[in-house]
Structure formats: structure tokens, C-alpha cells
Image 1 (cartoon, rainbow over the protein chains, first blue to last red):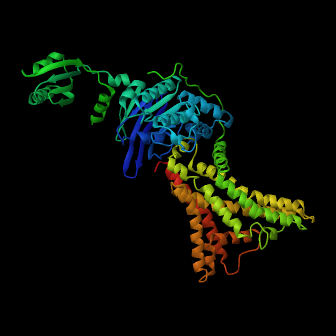
Image 2: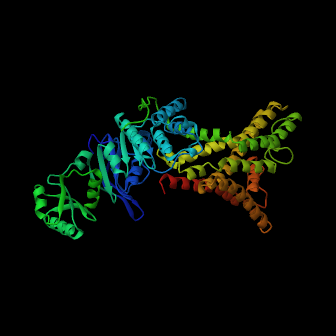
Image 3: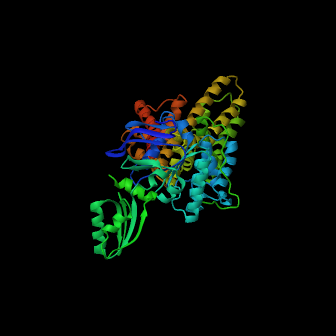
Length: 309
Length: 280
């Protein structure tokens, strides 16, 4: 594993009965805010469990800042703050008591745990509601408390599982801003999310899993930079004309993606020398509305990575 | 991206030194203890229990002339601590209330993950929770026994303090056994249901059903008396205070039953918690 790696696995094989959850996975996660992407069942949660030392790998190794989570479990877990996806808060407590309690379980002395709880609850912008019982909190408030409890012991690594789940747009934006602030504070954040726009906004590096295997990793910049010769084309016409046009393009070039909406066709094509290639293939009844150099969004890059075998 | 407020609060690091691992277990047990001793149900049971079970023997024995603390002060007929059925019934009720949500609340809130993503193993969790429950049980099962014994020793006319202290030590063992006996069973039931009510009532009903079964079969074979948890504890007190088992009972069977009823619930609870820790 490389020197600038915060979290790394090497040939990690984890099975649940006959199901392979992680298939000889080797990943290297650098410092900073890193997106962990993958469809349901890709192995994201199992990877997080492996980092916490909660699963027994059949083969391979896990390293968190150079330590094995199963052998150095106290040191590793003291380094990690985990924000689970699902509801997990103790409903009978108020936010201050919960965060203070979890801080103490993570090694904060009782004398300073209350003060620390207030600091992190201030940070996540939970006002006087912090004294209310958690059972009365909205989903957005619960997400903030979940983030606060993960920060209670000031860990250098944060594992955030769908942190914006169930939040309204303003709440989502604020949560992303909090994550950005945490990243600026020098922490490594592994952000598991289905909302790729969010990942694109806050992450500088992305790891993509599929069927327990690594399907792609790199900086967001690398993944979303348009390939040489990639173009996005929008055309209008009757449905048969659009289909014929698409077939002609597919026979000559590498069509990355295509969508036909009634009288409109949107395609991403690789391997073009310029817009003239497209115009030459368009039939007489077809309008080429736009030809742009393609720079895929993260979502497109993700779909392409997952779909590419 | 902008956060709300004119001047949003930035992230502040924490510069303190972490506590030792064993302290984290103490934190868990202290949380259980402080929550339980604020519970009205627990307070009422403790008050009634201490008055009815412990206060009268204490007053009675201290006022009468006595040479020292003897095993007859602890068990047997009359005003003794471990002799009456009330002590056992109230211990069971207290254990049902104390243990009912020890694990079931974390099951219902899915909050295991908060512990197990921290440096807490299933055994640490169980020890922390049970230590908290044990400390509450001790208020009824152990501390009054010690207070009772010390008061008698302090007012004894005889000079053999060593023997009195020995009996006091045996009384402490009996008190600890009572706490662990009921608490282990209650914790097991708390680990198999999300409902606090089911766990609490289940503890009570389980002991009641076992008593009924014992009552039904004891005429066929006297060893069925051991199936009654209350009898089992009474026989254990006899063993602890050196009075031995009734002749009609098999000692081997006694040891097998008492070991099972102490260990099996703990193993079941541990297995359940371990499954939760690994997300199964």
C-alpha cells in the first residue's frame, strides 16, 4: 500500500455463506473527502464493516492508517467516527446526553464530554432542540445528531453512510457544507452515497464498487473529464429516422449512451474527429440541434463504469 | 454551499487525552445505574424491599442480645434475610424491571452500531450493561446484607469477630449469587425481544412456569424441586452457609442445574449480542 493511503485493503475476500460480499478487493483510499459509490449490494457496507473490524475476512488484509482493525481494534476504532445510514439513536435520551455518552464510550473524560457534546452540536447547528428527547426529532435533526456523535471524540477518519438521507434540499446543502468543513479540518471522510451530484460537489476522489469488486477509482476530475473525441449530440426527428440515425452512428463509432424521447435523441459518442462526422450521417429529415464536446457528469461516469462489464 | 447563520460555527478539534479501555465499560455501567436509580418503579421496589425484607431482621437482631453473627441470622426460620420467600420474589421483580431494557432498547433503537463502531466488543458491552444492572440489584441483594451483618457484628457481645466476618462474607456471596441468578436470566430475555414489556413480564412468567412445572412433578421425583428457581436458590443458600442439600436431592444434579441456570442465559445473551455486533 502506498504511503499516502489512509485506508487500504489488499485482496480482501469476505463471504456471507455462499454470497461473496467483497471479491479480492484491493482499494487505496487517500486522505481527503472520498466518495464510496456502488449500487445496492456492491459491498460498500461490508467494506465499512471490514474497516471497523466487524467482519472476518476469509482472505486478504485491511489497513487503517497502517493498523489492522482486528488486531489493534481499540486504536483503530478510536480513530474512526461512524455515521450509520439507518436510525440508530437512543430515542429516550436528548441530543446532549447521547453525544456526551458516546464521546465517553469513545474515551472522552466525563468532565469534558458535556462541553465537547455542546461544541459538536453547535457545529452541526442543532440549537435549543438539543435538550429535547431524540424521539421527537425530525429526520434532518437526527442526521445532524448522528454526525455529531461520530465527531464526539474528534476522530481523524469519518465513515459517513448516506449522510443526507431523508433531508430536505436546504438540509442536504447544509450537511454537505458541514462535510466540506470537516474535510478542511484535515480529516479523511469516506462518504458512501447514492446521490452522485452530492459526491461530485464535495469529494475529490471516488472509489466505485460493483459486485464486491473495485470497478473504478480516481479523482473526480479524472472520472468526469471528457475523453478525446467524445461528443454529446442532440437530434430531432421522427422516431424511425432517429433510430436509423442511431444505427448508422453505432456502426461507425462507439456510442457510449443513447436515449430516445419521442422525437428527440440524446447520445454520447466516442471516437469522433469532429462534429462533421455526425452531420454527414444525419438523414434529410433529421435536425441536429447540438453537438458539444462531452464532459460526463459523475453519474454518467458511474453508469459507464458499472455497465462496462 | 453556504451554511445558515451569519457566522456559522466552524469545526473545533478536541485536544484531550483518551481514557483507558476499561473506563469505557465503566461509562456504560454508570449510564445504566444512573438511569435505573431514577426510575420510579425501581425506587418503589427498593424502598418496599429494604423496609419489608431487611429492616425488620436488622432491628430484631440488633435489639436482642447476641454473641455474634451466625448462619442462623442469615438463613432459616424467623427474621432472617435469605430465609423468607419475600426476598426472592422482590429480587426477581427488581431483576425483571432492571434487566427488561438492558439489551432490548438497543435492539429496538438499532443502537448497537453506536457501541460496536467504537472500541466496544460484544463481551465489553455485556459486561458494562450487566455491571450497571448488578450495581442496582446490589442495593437490595448485597448492600443491606452487609449493613445487616456489620450492625450485628458491631453490637455483638462475643469476641469471635473472625467467625462473624466469615458469615458476613458468606452472606455477601449469597447476595451476589441472587443478583447474578436473576439478572442473567433477565438479560437473556432482554436480548431476544425488542419489547421491554415482553422482557420484563417474560422474566416473571418464566420463573412462575418453572415453579409450576416443579410443583407438578416433585411428587414423582424429589429432584424436580430443583426446577423451581426459588427452591434452587434456597438450596444454594444452604450450600453456601454449610448446611448442605436435603438428602432426597442429588448433589450432582444440583450442580448441573445451578451451573446451567447461571451460565446458559449468559451464553444466549452473549450469542445474541455477538450476532448484532456483526450485523446479522
